[in-house]
Amino acid sequence: MSFLVALLGMAAVMAYGKHRPVGATLTWGEAIAAATFAFALMFWAYGVVPHQWLQWANNELRWTPSKKLFGPGNILKHQLPFLLDYEKIRDIVVVVIYGFFLTAHVAMWAMWQDRSKKAEAKKQRELAPSTYGRPLVKQGG
Image 1 (cartoon, one colour):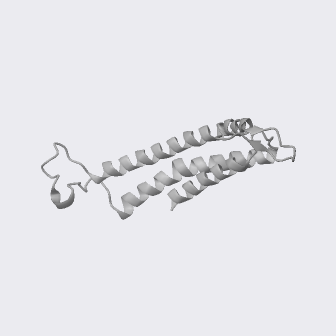
Image 2 (cartoon, rainbow, N blue to C red; image 1 turned 90 degrees about the vertical axis):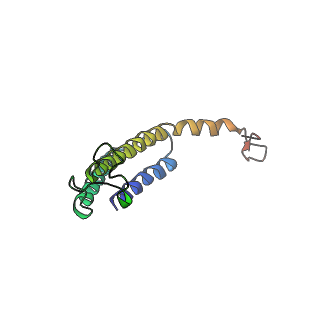
């Protein structure tokens, strides 16, 4: 559930970015609200989500060092030259969670910064209005 809350927060940022005009000024209140939301979303993604996964894996799934991973039907019991336990799998999942959110974080900042390029490309496609006042658009653009 915590992962879904993080995804919803990221979707809210993207939806807001599509509707916010490029270059619009911020009031102090808007800036404080945006900074608070950004901090809360990063706290949630980098703190709460991995913590909840670790708690679930430790307590409910009991993925501890004493629980060895041998695969279905113990097919890996004599195949691997090392012992693999569920704690290592749990930690790999945490690394994947951090990697996912870091990648999404960088991608969202890049998309937010590139909003102006999309607006400029749209302006370049538009021509002067027709004699009837309708905006004209280049064919194939």
